Amino acid sequence: MRDKVVVKWGGGLITEKSQLCTANREIIHSLVDTIITCHNNNMDVILVHGAGSFGHLRAKKWRLNEGKIDPSNFTAVDSCTTQEQAVKLVRKDMLTLNSIVMDELTKADISAAVLPPHMWAKSTGENFEGDLQFFASAPEGIVMVTYGDVVDCDEPQMFGILSGDDLVTRLAIEVPNVKRLVFAIGGVDGLLRCPPQRATEDDLLEIWHPGIIFEGEHQQNIDVTGGIGLKAARGAKVAQNGIEVMMVSGQHPQRVADACIGVATRGTKVVSK
Ligand code: IPE
Image (cartoon, rainbow, N blue to C red):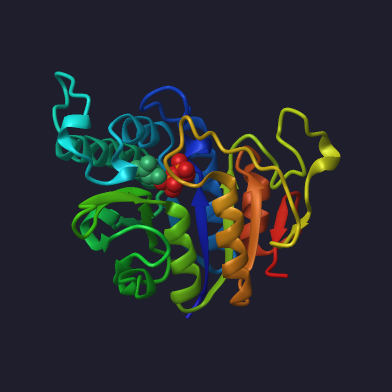
């Protein structure tokens, strides 16, 4: 069986994060080549993408991350009168973003199959329920794709947000033959010692483990999932299982490709200690 790499394309990278449902097609297009590089180096790819402006803005507005709230606290608008309707709308938006990703893969002649989490996963966080067998048994050269989504939960929560960061954690650890996990992120070269606005070239942490303090930026006013801090924590857990973990800027596809095939590049290597 060939080695595999699990790659997360962050939502902040593949969308314009503050503009509702706006994809960054150019970036998506450039990232597709990194998958071809993996195939040319005999590696299979499991691709997980984030939500960016196709998920966070509406999920936040309609409080889907909080689960089912008292209907009297829901601010209805003409286009959406209940949280249940909001769940459907956000799932639809995520299918739209995914179809853009799938379209770019197809145009590059890459065979890919998508498994939308709301169809196979339940509950949120890294202990979500769901059978990862389809990811493990994909034929050579077929890219298995999934993404951060609104999933069903048990009562009383009823629904919640399953982050792509939780998906990659489980996929990297539980699918056999995964050698690496690569986070392609937007706006930064990796984990920085201080927030990006203040950081210089030298503030990149080339190696990070949970004992190193960093001031990650988390746009709590926009994000319904954990931001860079969640990625770092999940990355350390994956590294503990003997899998290489890198965080690199997705605005430099060459770095993503290099990280995927195990060539040293600019970014943050995440280790467990
Ligand atoms: C969030 O998924 C999913 C929704 C908001 C519906 P992620 O946590 O993987 O998304 P990004 O990468 O932060 O955008």
